[in-house]
Structure formats: structure tokens, C-alpha cells
Length: 300
Image 1: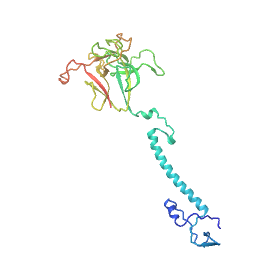
Image 2: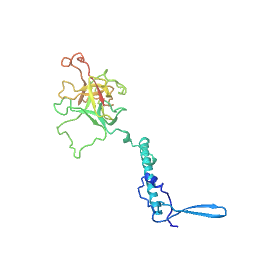
Image 3: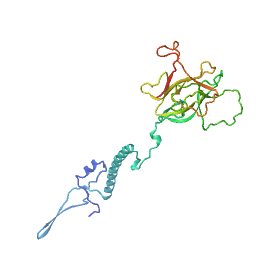
Image 4: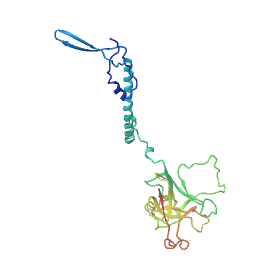
């Protein structure tokens, strides 16, 4: 008998085609390369019947190639399903491919955007915001005609100078520390460490970063934020005194401020006064002359 092995009859080829195997099978009609032997045993003798039929054969090499292709097809489908399932579970469970635990970095859980504002009068930003740095409020001297007109939050640690600082005043612009010019009865004393009168004390500040917010606004004459905005803090509107030469921007001072301990000496410099409404020029009714204006800082 030929070394080729009979592996299937005529009805098997269509089932393989249904699996996506397109290699044609050889029909061995002209060459009688195999026999189907039907044997039967009889009493008293042996009857051998040989039946010749047109058969479909596949050589051993053809068979091996088709089995390999079939295995690849099944394996590919299995891997695709496994990958899809693994990818979904990995995203849900925080695991890497293959089930290995993937440690979530802090950056994965923190929004990539945020907003920065200054909290005037406080050394820390509070639990809802990151304190970038704490400092002291400064600006130009209260009675100079020139200089800067805005208040700055100056850091108290890791102050850095240029490569060639020149000692002594060069009579340019100056930066002075700021003092509260307000007595008792306005600010809460909760954060003043047993001090009741903030007058002449230096003013602290902090620069704050709040994650997941893209904008902030300071609203004068309000203690609450509009719908959809988050309140960072509220307090009183403050600026330079109206009779001083140096005009300053208005800032929102925290309603429960800190004081820099041991800084109560009257050094002047940049000064901070409460801002009072003046009705007539402002609409009377909502605004009352002599009332101190409040303020609130909101983020969204």
C-alpha cells in the first residue's frame, strides 16, 4: 500500500472550507493510490470483498500544512478574545496585561489643569488647594509718587539673587513690607494666636494652586459665590489710604487672617486699609456710605 494515509472521505472537505481553509484537495481519480477494504468473516471460509471507489485523499504533507493553518486560525481568534477581555479588565482593575498589578501614579489621579490665586492674609491655602509657597505682602512705600502700584506675595524661604547684586540703594524702585492699618472688631481673631488687635502687624500671604479648576475671580461686595463656582475664601477689600501718594490695587484680605508674630513695630512701608463704600457716586441702596466692603474669591 502507498505510504500516503487516507484521512477523509468526500464529505469532509466542505467542512474544512467552512473554517476558512482554502487549499484545494487532490482528487486521486486516475491513480488508484488506495483501497477501502471491506472484510467479513464467514464460517467455513474467508470471504474477502474488494470495493473500488473514487476517493479523495490528502498526502501527509498536505495534511500537516492544513492542520497548522487550522491551529493558527483557532489560536488567533482565542488571542483576540483574550486581549479584548484583558484590556477591558486592565482598565477597570488597574492591572497590566497578563494580570500583573500596575501601580497607579499620583499623576494619573490628578487633573492635568488647575488655577492659581493668592490668598492674602493667610500663611496656608487650606485643605482644598495646594500651597505653592507662603510669604509676606509687599509693595511700594505708602507716600512715594512712583514705584509699583500692586501688592506682591514675596516668598520668605529660598530667596535667590542675581549673579552680581550691587550693595546700597541705587535710588530706583523699592519694595517694602505691608502692615495692617486696621483695629479690632472687623477681622476674626481665630488665627491670630491670642492677639486681638492686628494694627501694625505684618501681613502674610500664600500662593495657591487648585486642581481641576481653570479660572478664578475676586468679587467685591460679596461673601458668597455664584451658582456653579467654588468658594476659596472671603473677607474684606483692602488697599492704600486715599490721602497717600501711592495708589495701590484692591485686594481681598482673608476674613480670619494670620499675623506675623513679633512684627508689630510701626515700620510703615506698604500699608493696607479697609475700603469704604461711597454712595452717590455708587448707587445708594445696595451701597451705604461708610460701610466696609467685603469680598470673596471663587474658582471654577
